[in-house]
Image 1 (cartoon, rainbow, N blue to C red):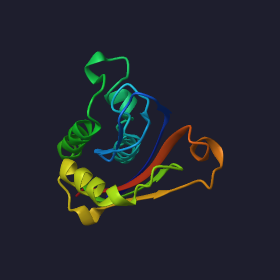
Image 2 (spheres, rainbow, N blue to C red; image 1 turned 90 degrees about the vertical axis):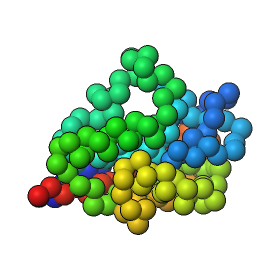
Image 3 (tube, helix red, strand yellow; image 1 turned 90 degrees about the horizontal axis):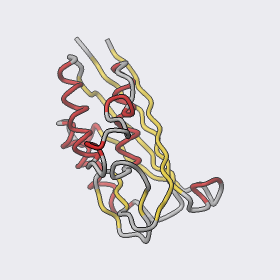
Image 4 (cartoon, one colour; image 1 turned 30 degrees about the horizontal axis):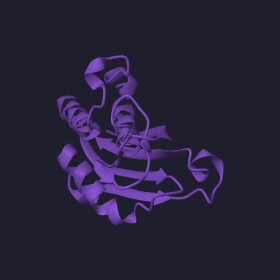
Length: 158
């Protein structure tokens, strides 16, 4: 059996926060606002995985009303999702993702993001795709108000 999951997340930019994407701290004058570290990429990937398992979403698993997840490291949360994948008898076949934001440039950090995500999930880095795109100054991403990410995940189960 194979299942596909789709994930999406969005966070607004805020002053006084670190910008964390794919578990990488990226130098920038603003970070993303959220209850956890607001790693929009990892959040979209977690939702894609959970969707493929039919296990709800990150809001169900890690509610923003729970103080335990305040400023949580999203890569650690991704590790927990990876454990759930194994517990439910699934295997991650492939993940692909895209981050939408006007700036900063993501390409210098892309490979480290892939490594961080692959290590957290105990999969080969070749099974993790990460890319970024601008929105040509259109929408909230283009105006620099925030960032979004989408991800798909293919799981298999014997």
